[in-house]
Amino acid sequence: ASYGALVASVTCFGAMIEGASALCFGLDGALLAACGLLLGAGSDPLLRSFLEVRGWYVLVHIGIDVLRGCGSPGGTVGNLAHFAGFVGGFCYVLVALPDLGGRAVPTIPCLTRGSSGRWEQADCLAFFSPRYSWPVAEVQFWAKAILAMGVLAALLNAFVRHRSQHASADGYSVLIK
Image 1 (cartoon, helix red, strand yellow):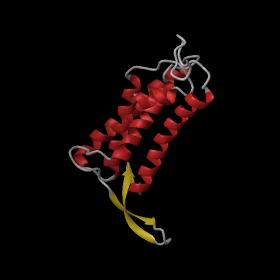
Image 2 (cartoon, rainbow, N blue to C red):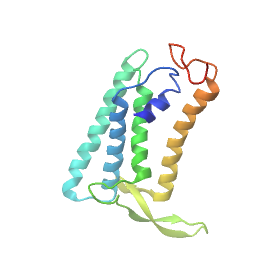
Image 3 (cartoon, rainbow, N blue to C red):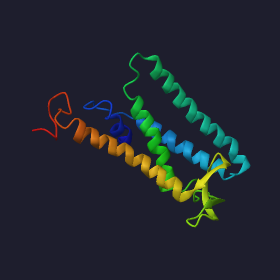
Image 4 (cartoon, one colour):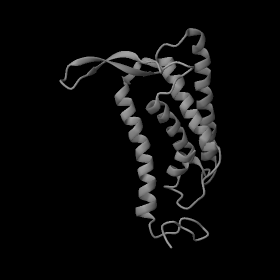
């Protein structure tokens, strides 16, 4: 939720963005990432349909919110917060690799180019299918980079772009006295 509000402050500087919706979208992102990782690694066939249903639930929830936002003349207040919350939850799972169902995140072996340019075997994360697999270190690097870009955009917005502007309607700002 805080990552969603932080990123949303880029377009709505000074607006108070609060609520549980960005948190719900963060959970949706984490759920979709977890389902994708389990399906990609070839989870238990009995669990496969459950994971597919959970993944579709997430997509329907996001789709309804996007349609609602597009149907409003100015969108909804938290469209960016919702999207950033989803990305934050998705990236969290990729960076932290928490236990899923009491077990470590499953990886699959794959080939990747090593530093010498030769093909080497590595542990990879597969998303929904083994066809969509990438080395764990590369996935974590990009997930961390995406999270850092959101924080950096919010900080630059607050301390560079809006440095002389009051951050709230009541005139109180930690940047201006």
